[in-house]
Every structure is written in C-alpha cells, then in structure tokens.
Image (spheres, one colour):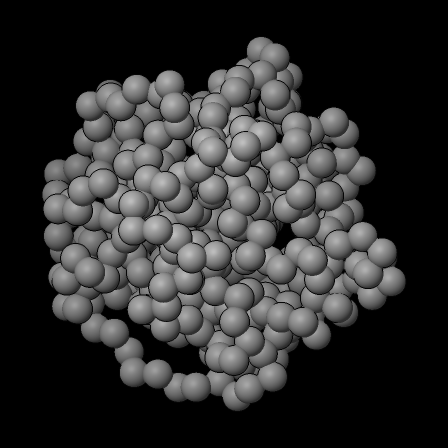
Length: 378
C-alpha cells in the first residue's frame, strides 16, 4: 500500500497496513489448517542466495537521513499521539528504539535502505509502538537493512547472515547514538520482534558491564523470547520484578486463548541460550505491561488504553479497559478468550504478536515514565 507524503495520514492506518507485512492471506483459515507452518516457509523464505553487502560505518549515521526519528527531526512517526491524548513536556531520557520487520520480499534476504514501501511500513510500526516512549524523552529510531520476514522461518545459513547484516547496521547506529546523545541523560532501550532480537545482542555486546549500563532505565525486549534461565546472565540485567525497578528487562509475547505457540516453541526449544546451555523447556521472561511485573491484571481496573481503529478506518483511538493479561507457566502473555476486534491480522495460533504494543499502549507509556522517575530519584 502506497502511503501519502502527509506522514500523519499513516496514523489512521497503522493497525491495518501491518497485514502487508505478514501476508496473512497465505496463512488464514482452511489453507493454514491444511498446510500450517510449512506454507509460511514456502511462501516467505527467499530462494535466492544471500548477497554480501558492505558494512555501514557509524560515521554515516551522523546523517539525519539515516534515521526515522532523532533529535533535529520534527513531525516524525514517533511524535504521533492518539486523538484525545495531549502532548506533554518530554522527559530527560534518550530512547533508542529498533523497529520490527517491515520487509517481506523474497527476492533478497535484506531490505535496502531506500525501499519506499518497506520504510512506510516501518513508520506505521513506529507510530503504534515507539510513540509510547515519546513522553519519556527523545526517541532515536534508525533505518537499517533488516532481514526479511522469511529469515525467521528457516535455519538456512543465509538467514543467519541476513540477521548479522541487519545487526551490524543497528550496532553502527547505536554507536552514533551513544556518541551524539547527551551523556548526562538516562537511556531507555526498546524494540519489537526483529528489533527486540537485535536489542538482545546490543545488550550483550555494547551495554553489559560497560559504563552505559549504569544509565539504563529499562530494556523493553518485546515480541521476542528471553529465557529466564539461560539468557539473563548474558544480558547482565535482571527481569523487572517491581513496577518501579530500573536497570531491568521487560519482555512479553501476546496470545489470546486458546493459545498455540508451537511455531515459537519449535525454534526456541531448539536454540541455545546466551550462556551456552539449551533453552529447551526453560521459562521465558514474561512482564505484564499492565502491572510492570509478572502479576495478573484485569482489563477494567488496570488497562489504561488500547489502540484500536474505528469502523471507517479513518483514525486510531485509545480505549481503556479492553484487555486484561496474565503470564502462563511457560512465559507467554495471555489476554483471555474474548479480546477486542482490532482487525483480521492475528497470526496463527491466536498469536497477537502484531499488537504487542498497541494492546497496552497507554500502560507502556506510563511504565516508561514511572521507571524514568524512579531512575532519576535514585
């Protein structure tokens, strides 16, 4: 879907255009029931060889054109607010946000930086996700040569190479972020899906056991599994167990009930944790964004606002009290068996991955502000 040059026009469509990211027509209804995950792989995994690309040095991220948002850019995707939500003076945090997969091509393994459709979709995600952090401070959201969606559906070597290329861009952008951001300000790190995967690597390679770690308010590793047993030691950061805790990790993966997370568990249980031990059978970090802890919460008392479209697709509004949540024994965030209608883009297995942030947008905003206040008080 081509997007107009009026950036705020994207806001009213962000919960709908996500459908183009996951090509759900290929995995819906009877077809998915017959062929399941194999159909996903056949449809979305590139059949071409991986193309080696030159690295992007950190100095090139001094160019504002390499960012979707950063200080010095105005009216960006992250500045969007739902109707009725008033802007507030921004907090003091420097926020580094890594957007999720917006490239679904199969003719190459990595997106190019000037792909208009891919970038338009990335802006849509930034509106529905990174905008929740804008009240806490200045958001930096880099462009990067992300791996295509199909890279997550295969164990081919090309998929690993594609993710390595994408991470190298993110790492270069982060180095520039650290160099250019105010060194006296606290830092919030956040991402979703592929962005969250790259964030775990940043935490291990660029943050853990460095002076930067002392500035971390929190790391929002959303839409990507993090093992409580094998991963947290590598991140050198505990999971958040209190609503005002700082220097900790939040993570959740949203499912309605009955939930079937087989596609995630298949990859997770076959993988190795950051400490070198198998992840098989280990629980995942699960933060309930309604509480900022692992505690369950009811919709009517705790949910401050879910982003939903109106019937005419003309706007995205925020409605409180729609979704409760609880963590299950394995670490998936369950939102009950009667979730609101946000559109037809729920993934197989009742996976609400696309809506990990928008289900809890107002609570994520409040969580970032609360932890920032606690960090500053500390």
